[in-house]
Image (cartoon, rainbow, N blue to C red; front, side):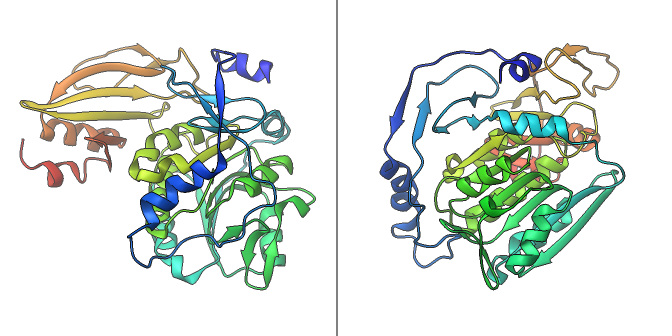
Length: 356
């Protein structure tokens, strides 16, 4: 992994860690979100894998993102693997349209399918978006083996694999995978995601435990928007994780720096705003990509000014009114977090916070 980490100008540490009991991870979901919540659709079934993963909790760091290289499943960081980075070297760049496949294998989860279908391709970029429903084992196998830039899977996954119309497909049984990146928005999808990496995928987003359908819909919508806006997998998860309380149950596996689209400004960036007595205090953050890594030049969209900054991280901090932020977001077409909530293009900022 060292050549790939050096190429990203990553700070490499050998940190102190401690193992976390599997029961604690499951309890975080069950106690907080199933107890007393009433009947609600979950994206998993009772079956568990025969050998539960070994969880490792990393110490907090002041870095923009964290990745874990080694045995065990990290909490609070992405799971980087050598196979994923080598898979990236073996892939040729996409020629023509960016291909996105949305697979919905449960009719009761159609709400997320409808939301993400309208988000992907919502840029002046060549997207080919296809929605597939109720796939059989053979049909899902063919979809996974087909060359695809992003697979967004909506449905059920258990210890045996992907639940299909006529049975279950275990990704470990595939000969090879043509999917570059994936979002497996289903319960306990970690093992299947790792199998996709071993069979040829570059990176993806998975879950560590059960997730309720309404939480999965919120995360799926956020992920779709951020990936479509050019954010890498790892950055998309860092931003979207706060959208729901169980955001910590989502994890990036493989090469977390992989992107499926280019940001409109070249460098994906985000405004993080907090309400003050006089308006808003705003941090402007940028995120590295393979094309524009650490130390790249970044020029914000500021009327009448030409500011130059080195990416990545917080490049500037300023104060403004709600109306000013709304205009800025609309002009740049980038997302913002206002008091912890994710918004797009300023469309909801004024509605939520009233006049300036």
